[in-house]
Length: 291
Image (cartoon, rainbow, N blue to C red):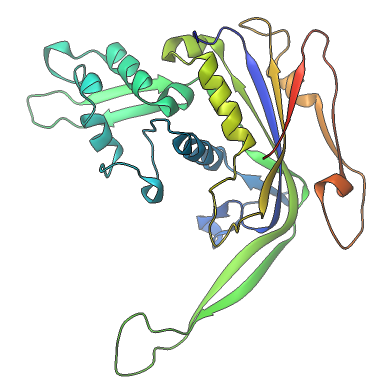
């Protein structure tokens, strides 16, 4: 497939039930929330999950997390240094920032999707360091819950000795936090002008869409048990031109998620919320259910 030749907007509706979708390290790892009490999941966290899904799909990823690393490189710099095509333009007579960026975009899908800042010091005093910025076409908004969230905090203890000693270690106290139930929405867009610069293709867009549909697959942790986070709907708008028929703001506003129930023991997206999309003349909306 060729370089992306039309603007794309998208939106994702997902739910959280008895899980911590994105802890705040500056607030005791409590689930993030804004001053209105609405839950937040940062764009950085969402991009991490998309990268993980692309990695599961067999794509080459530059920014890998330590627990998901599938090569022997311990840092981004090590991964860049090991790529001969990229290193050819990093230093010496062939040093060229534009060709360096192009080679990096060809090598890693997350670079040509989200962009990346390459800032590395020189190996020796005579050589020049690397300082290259790549702007990616895929932009992701922070996710916010539709309604204020309720957070439950539970005190936990560790009563097992970590090391062998002559006496029993004292219990270690800690806290664990979870969102009881919440429905979150986030939006995104794919810009064609930036896609042309990074070589982002129509096929890459399809891979991003598939990653969104399966966003929480293989994402288990003690804070997010299997089944506690679920993608319910992915909405995908493909414009007929590079600039698009409508602004991204107007397209995103066409998605409405409204509360239709105010009480009940069991909370579910289908029972508690009504999800609708206002039609925009000449712009079709493709709807996908989460897997």
